[in-house]
Image (tube, rainbow, N blue to C red; front, side):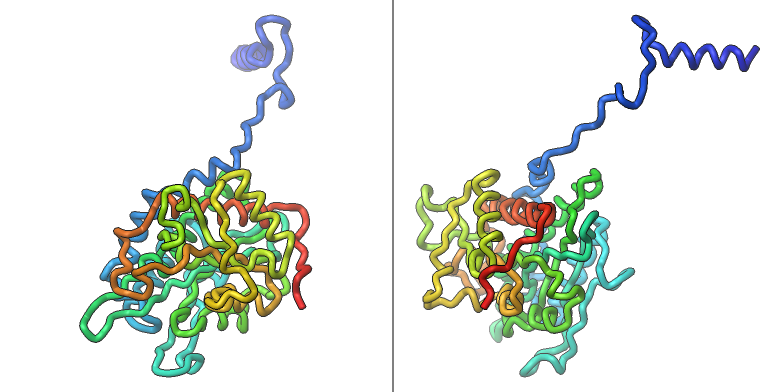
Length: 344
């Protein structure tokens, strides 16, 4: 009796009341995939601000390369990736690519790059590198702490927010097809040491590195864009130097999702500021890895102890961070790897 009753009950559940149509896998409505914009919305001005007030606070003592404040900053970054469940490519609990004291010139102590990775689902051997330097220039003789909120606290915490967006996509079953390496480099202020060390000792072969998106100062507005109608901008440097594909992808991502004014003023070959050679992307570019350098230009607090988190334009910073996310998303998920057609 019990077996018969159960069988009848199950059969009745499988039949609709109207015509007795059996419910099959084909008749069940699938859960819709989320849009890319849903993941981008996790990048918020509020979270960027919360991160930056900590990262550019006095506790990190200006993050001078090899000094205790820089070591604290490295530990902070490691903990954030661990909280997000994003592993290190170095294995287990080791998020640090150690750089020995002997590698540096002058009186600079041993330091470390901080690395985390989201592995690609289809082409994990192909790598998109998102980079930002997390060091700054420390404390002066008068005891002033150079917090470096814009330089480059802004780029550093932007990477954390972008990592969160990609990780959420992965957790929803929509992770990137190619791998995303989050590379926080040290020693930039001393001479691009951290990125140079990585490219000379790459964790992943440079031949497999599709592109480098480098983020160095994206939290402020420079004197050329102070008016309200001009402030919705970001400088892009290097986007067309090595890959026309990369430049087109960047332009399309911006027009489709963000609508910032992309200013190429400093991308000119004869730019006297030579910004193309002055941040960590250059160590990738000189190895024929296509790059984009995201930059807001210099301002009155550049390399001064007055570069503090209260002066950051957080909504604009979030918008710039989303552009980087959308560009990285396309690079990671398009069918074909971008072509390097501009190398000598």
